[in-house]
Image (cartoon, rainbow over all chains, first blue to last red; front, side):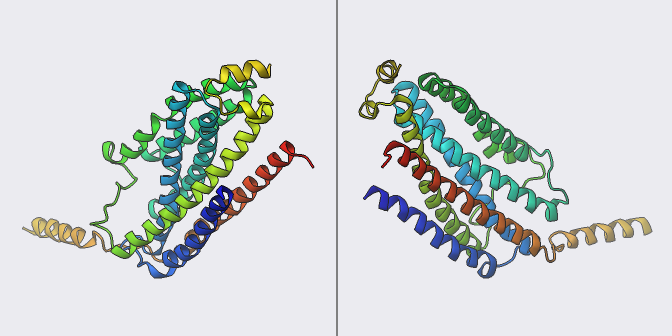
Length: 234
Length: 62
């Protein structure tokens, strides 16, 4: 049953993205100043929102892991970090493509872009750390602490356009944007949310399978104290 | 007076220019963005499905 629900998220996401692509490319009106180039917003913004949401999930899982040690929260942290990096990397690449015709450059060291690049580097480091440490318990603690430190950048990204007015525009409000644009953006956001749920869920199952292999004790995985499981595994 | 007229005309012209400029075309950027998005979705979805299948097979070899 759970497996069917997981696949349903992918099917819903693909269906919504197909409809959303038509709406974004043909139905939504062009921007007054950016013209048709603004249509990039419907894939750029939702993917970066999903990246920030995934990083937030990673942060929450890491904090919970430090208080209630469980392989489930550790696996969820690993899954959400990877999914966040994928959405973040694609979102930043699309922002660069959007920047070329509107700003005249592919990249600028604007506060929003710089903090987004730092986030990507920080979470790539987080994923690298997870690969380099062999001991599951030590890896879980170290990566949880790294995740909490890396998350400091997320609010900086969000507020960077308000604190340091620079090249990147501030967040738009539904009151100032055409209702058709708002509708398509919301539609695309839910489509990417459904896709993100499928991604995190699937990646979580992969991470849990890896933990079970490492510990070679499937029955002990739900135990609240991982110290016991790792000691037995040794 | 002539200078004031010039400055006035310049300010008026600048004011009219705000919001009047519009990027024409640029569809190649839009197609590139949507192409990258769909390519990333296909590649990452396939990668996850294959990795999960591989993990499940190694756990339960038949």
